[in-house]
Image (cartoon, rainbow, N blue to C red; front, side, top):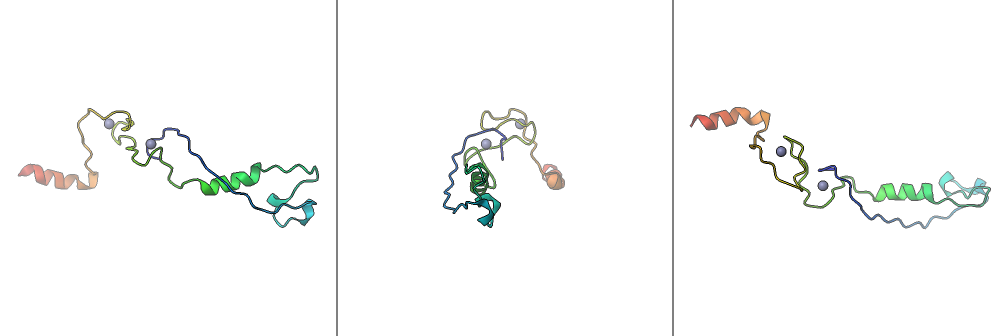
Length: 100
Ligand SMILES: [Zn+2]
Ligand SMILES: [Zn+2]
């Protein structure tokens, strides 16, 4: 979310649903065992995994993210360019300070 680096995260899902055979008895198509009698847990696990994923995934809690100026990954190195991280909406205040 912050630095755009890929990372691995363990997610778990507990499946305690009741699956139906013949499939016509299932109220939810995800809970139907098909006529082949082979139950593919992939689709229902995908649903559970999506629920377990964090809304704002970060590679680590203290991820510093990317430099808004140059895009440098601040976890890997600090920037050497002068910091000009003044919010444009506050730039007017900055000019007042520099007059003193
Ligand atoms: Zn990160
Ligand atoms: Zn930078």
